[in-house]
Length: 374
View (cartoon, rainbow, N blue to C red):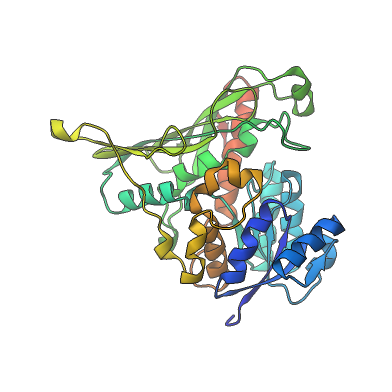
């Protein structure tokens, strides 16, 4: 496909943050938007100058001009919307998580295979500047052998709408699971690290009124998971309610030569720990480069929060580490066949299933749960 990829976005809260990126990308045409609320749909369309507007998602999928659909809907809609778009012959980018059940993950993989189209889960952390920095250190051999990985995502979701109150923490775990697997992967060579099994324990208790919705009592869930064909184990921790902690999506790598430690607080710098001579064993904070140079020039500016970002997930998440233009570019390049989709459908399912199976383990008192290899 030589012409520009015509993109449609559904979900115009968080999703609207991507509109100017697609508008400025040299290989994209920001073609259509979808929202059930007509007033909100028109306000967004007028603001960004988008003519093709759809209240009905199914009607939008019938538009033959649309090549790709970027889904930013609520979590319960991710699976069916992804399947419908793939079945309509559209490439799909979907915000996290892929789904909330193994069955739906499998259906998405099957729909992707049948359609031959691209599916990517738009996982922000593996395109954040901190992750890209740690990955670069590992690829250049600076870290040495990876010995252990740790991720955590602590976020206070009080005030978030609808389905959020009481949601099992590990159902929304991809932000801390993904970097632990991505750093050991090399998509260009077809080498993808996959989680094999998980053990998880729940801790604490959320407010009683929130428990009954999902029958999930835990304030915090923490898990360790084994990585297939690897001697490395990863640990991840998630909380959504009733845990006092500043928002933090983090990723630590313990290496044989150098270890990388994500900053504890916003506006701090990450830490490197060096092993060797005594003078090198003093931890030091390091500045993280922007990595905008990996992107086409017109969208490099979006690695910083330079546009009028308004959605709480963007503001509370410190701009998602400058990941949005990297995600959009990765998706478009995969649609054009210029690079592998990452994470593709099977990889996205594995990253999602770590959390689903972890919650199952926690509800079983910490029993080991095998992760389906879909």
